[in-house]
Length: 222
Image (cartoon, rainbow, N blue to C red; front, side, top):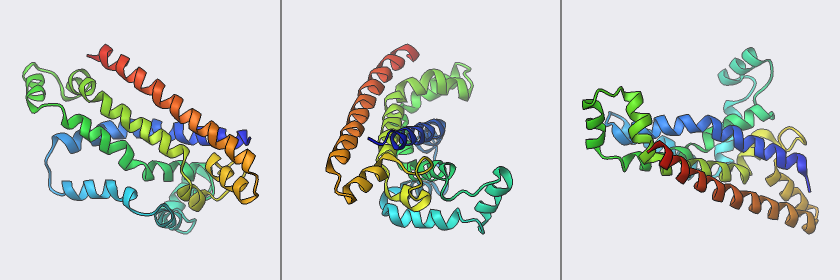
């Protein structure tokens, strides 16, 4: 069992969820409640990582994050290191790749909130932020939590993006998915089976606990 790879995967999933939680709420609410020019294009861009093969998307991210690119140079100036083949690069790539998993379920959750409730909150003198927190979020909470569960579970199993952007550097970018692949390539089926079983158990436990907390927090916010 490669515990270092498992811990790295859990960190990657945790940071991805932490960053995408506010993004899913704000972007999901904006796409659900507003009509603006270019909305359909914005929705298509959000969905693009879901359509493209991970290796193709990973290739473009690898090119975009290169040391000689604008993004790579900005990152190196600010943080003093390269973005590709680093854990930080994995986090950025994972955030971008998981946008559809984080935003679309949240958007569906906010679409279930009726316009009359938003108008009633405004008539009661609630600010947009207070109305979002007190009125809309409790009703859209199941969608937001579904988004976070999908993001976490999907990040744990990411392979193509991780391999393209981060490589397989032990202790830095070698996640549990890559470790399982390496064990299979080495014909070590026992180790691969153990790591796969642990990954399945963590995913099931996370889903069960998250939905239980979602129901409790939703009632409390309501």
